[in-house]
Image 1 (cartoon, rainbow, N blue to C red):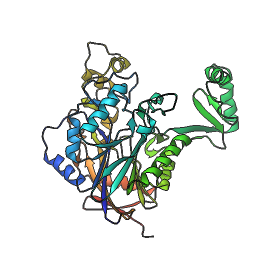
Image 2: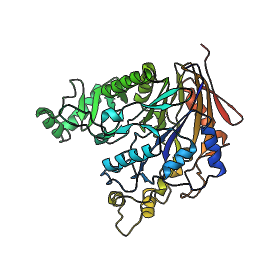
Image 3: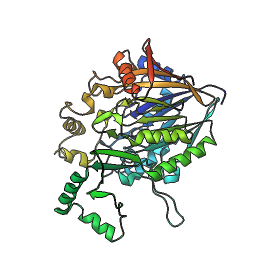
Image 4: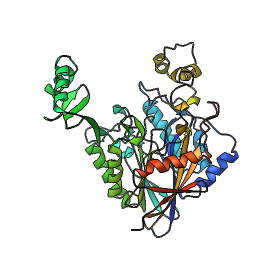
Length: 434
């Protein structure tokens, strides 16, 4: 623990292309990443050649990438990968199993999914010359049936992701809550849940909780919405961190979370800071967030970094080569249309969606040094992903000199008391000397 250990982390890698050449932009990024001993990525795609059936629900588009894309990630220098996210089961269990097999073939330490909950939530360990490092990965953004299931003596578990669910509660003043109850009584919106509760297939939400369809409401002085980590999932994460910190020098938690505060995607939902701090309280040395496809602020808590979102590292959603019929039907297309037609329909000819927002195509790569279990340095290197390029060329990272990237991150981080100093195009977090 007395030997300094450098870490690097990136946001989402939605990588759907091979890169048969290694240009200067690639070499610069790889050189930067390889300054670190521990290099972490979030893989936001499945990796296989049609080795699973497309799910009836996806993470947005159905994400499938050729196994050769993992060689690109390997050549960048990544050695740890989290893959719990809203695309992990885009191709059901066959896609999940194939992705795991290919990750193993390419020699990655990976975490966040598996054939049951024990595997999906397990810490995975990287053996470095300077330290042993554990990675635990989870996601709060997923379809409910994607959650891995617990193994029991009388039943096998279920493949899936390591879930970090949250409880959302809407608050209304008593008079408005009474109006909502009147609306529910005049319709059948709660009829099915009432039957389920009566027949024992669903627990009663509690005497102070009112259900309106699938949404929870409670009386409050002011109208608003709050979220809290699901107690069972948070307890499991804390126990896993407790296990990992006894078996490794450092523990890193990767969390994929699209959820936001109101309509502001740059601000995480309430449960995420609560979750992140609980992880560090339990012994984690860093929490690396991603999911909303843009940067969020950085918080230094107990002298350990929380990255609420590192945005995108590789983002090539427009280069998926196929989509199931469900995707086409959503936009009124038929068998005469191709995948380019479908993607253009989704984006209304590339005039809406993630492709038109410049901030989606900007991010940072943090490099941080830990000594004796404590954070001693944190650098922030801005990158951009080709926002001005044609859509079929967008998505590869390169170092950026755009001052707006770091300035925007500096402003967002101030809300957490984090001071970022910018010099020579690099951000450095000022650490308190307590």
